[in-house]
Image 1 (cartoon, each protein chain N blue to C red):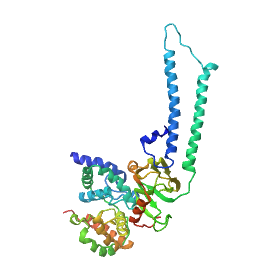
Image 2 (image 1 turned 180 degrees about the horizontal axis):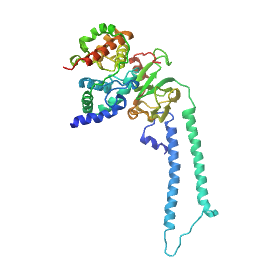
Image 3 (image 1 turned 90 degrees about the vertical axis):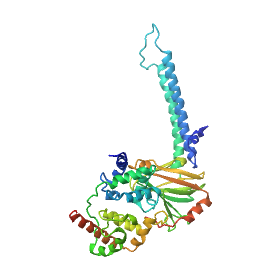
Image 4 (image 1 turned 120 degrees about the horizontal axis):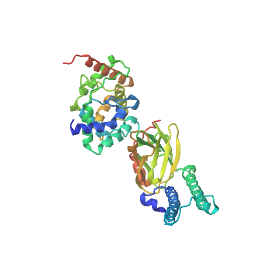
Length: 197
Length: 229
């Protein structure tokens, strides 16, 4: 284990209280699964939280919890790098679906998302689009609602990447959000069932 | 003389000095009796040190002339205690019991691990559409009396503004009313002073005590947000 990886693991100790030992997340604490997310995305979100681009909206209760935590890492930029690298290296957990929607309807809605998040919801760093497949589904619905309400991405100056997601979410009704997330769940299940190449 | 607390931390509210004085009196009276007790102890150690040919006595402390060594200091300390209790009740009443008329009211909501504030907006009335909500930053005007309605969304917290000498627990399910009147402009710390989980030590905020002009300017830049609940 290199010194950098060791520091990431040590820094992650504080995160385990909410996100779990393996980064599997806890819905009752509004903490999403983070294990195995791309390093660039984790770094970007930690930076946004620590700089106040996220977690400063009065209605973002989950984000308000995360902001002070991210600020503990902000004292040393290398901490953000190290913990992002460590979490990105954790295996993606197998999560049970919690959102009940209609995947068949969600599939049609998802065609809009494909251009950034990819056909298999695998994400695209070039477009700052994180992977959605395998994410905590309740978190995806929460964030879609947050984007729509301007709770997340409401300030294009502070959070330009988040702001680009807003118009996409604005078009969705709560039902459509559940549908599209159900489809993403199904997409992920199909990927898991495919034999590894 | 009693303002030595202000050397450690500035006082920025009307009752800060009262609390400082109370702490100073406790320190002075406690310190005085500590010095006396230690002085007597050292004096007795020196006076009754081992001497050749002198046997130590066993004293039961039942004789009158022996008892006075206990009773006199005891009674005098009780008098000091009564004085401290009277001063403490007086300060407690003025800070916690008495509620002077408010110029404005704010909501203070603690949650793991952030402070959320609801300002009454231009109309000066809480619970109306022009209320302004902020996270981490509370804006108030110097010289105005504020009532605060303190709540928590999850566990125990404590709304603490050290420069005001203000501390108030927030209790789940309760709305606790308190007050303060800032006397000095500036930006000061807000902290949580009640263990509230892993992020307790980093649950902080800032209070901006501003002139009416500065406050109005800040208010005009704020987006009007609807009441969250």
